[in-house]
Image (cartoon, rainbow, N blue to C red):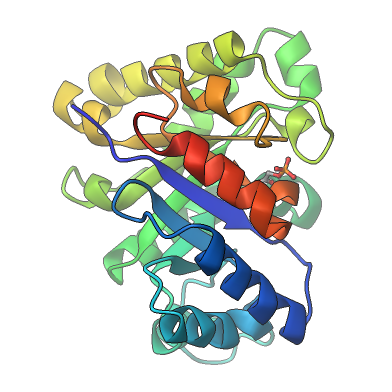
Amino acid sequence: MARKPFVGGNWKMNTDKASAVALAKGVAAAFSDTDAVDVAVFPPFPYLGYVAEALCEAGSQIKVGAQDVYTASNGAFTGEVSLDMLKDLGVGVVLTGHSERRHVIGETDADVNAKTLAALNAGFEVILCVGEQMEEREAGKTDAVNLGQTALGLAGVTAEQMAKVTIAYEPVWAIGTGLTATPQDAQAAHARIRSFLAHGLYSPEIADSVRIQYGGSMKPGNAPELIGQADIDGGLIGGASLKPADFAGILSAAAPGS
Ligand code: PGA
């Protein structure tokens, strides 16, 4: 089946109010072919509403996503942001399990699973991020880590809910480092995850429909070869998503026939 490419721009803890709005407008102006590629941007929490408004004003179909979420819908959870609040701002997608949340903030697979389930049960789309660290890769554990994080992250997710799930394979050592997995290594990791969805967790039909993004120093220069691989269905972009021209270059590389 032809999977529609999906590219996300993870702005992380960057931008301020004015530059977030300018960046959103810049991306909307630089790329409008959302029939060819699904696009989402993930601004910091304080700017989600402004970015959603700017994209709406620009008439853009680019989706607004959140980099994280909390599981409860309201209550005494100081500092957290709920799915209801995100919905209120026009957010429809959330990232779960980003490596910085796993390895810098200390989220466990159980946290990632709880957030994934809460978001899906509330009708959100989810991008579940998985990926091995350098030591794990060197110890030959790449597939074990990816499949483990995939299984634990998706525990309890129904076959029906998989229609709203994207997986992002992001080797941790490639994130923000300028190092990129070779297209062949990335393809092998993606194929392994897809085959696990087909024969371990779900079914060949579901595996065939789930989009698996690559993330880790993707740039306009390396995007065509990476996204050209059979099992790579787009990207989750950090650094290069902060420059409209670079992000648009990656989006164009993801458009079918490019
Ligand atoms: P990068 O980040 O493109 O800056 O490597 C990717 C990510 O963290 O999603």
